[in-house]
Length: 292
Image 1 (cartoon, rainbow, N blue to C red):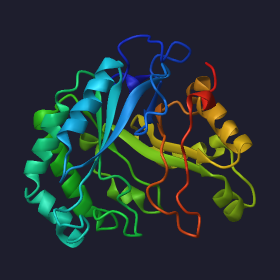
Image 2: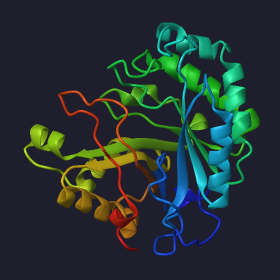
Image 3: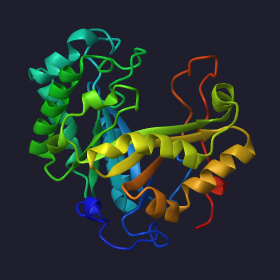
């Protein structure tokens, strides 16, 4: 399996005992609802690079190291304005010109303390046009130049990190690809919101159907792939079916051979979905995780 030669875990662990040794589960769990479940070998954290809480980051790194987990770090490059989104029109050009090199150095130096593998996911969902992120919806070349600048500078401090390019999967996402020299992993998100699916398609899609749709889109880059964010919200039967399929490791080896990790978003959605769907609650508890 050559795509995973540089991403394999060091050896069998409790987290991977029932799976192929290359497959990992991860979790973003700010509420600590999932204490130390052995199935998870990646911890996910989000960083606002203009306002790093170094104490909280050091704690996250120490906890991940103590639990033997790799770290997925989503770095969100907001502006330096008081509302973080103002000045978005020049954000990418300022990054490329080096005006945020101090922020890059701060983030990547802080992360260099980690003892396990680090995946750095910078400026995700860059093709989005709804105004959620100040780096998104801009000209593809401007994004590419900024992404390459970030990776080049961060590699000075984190040469062994794996850099994750993580689009949403909109119709023009390929135009934002920074190139193989700057991307180690292609990431994406999949969400199962039962009410939304029924409204749009007339029925609730399964986890595997939803995964397959985006996986096929992202398979053309010849890179290892990870689900960097995943969540399910709906009635108990719907959510249980999603989680049961999600934690069936052999499915990935058979049907999604380039996928090496799925990372669950164990929190409420911080933004309102359009169309009156509110903020979905993706949270699960220990009892929701199927026995391996």
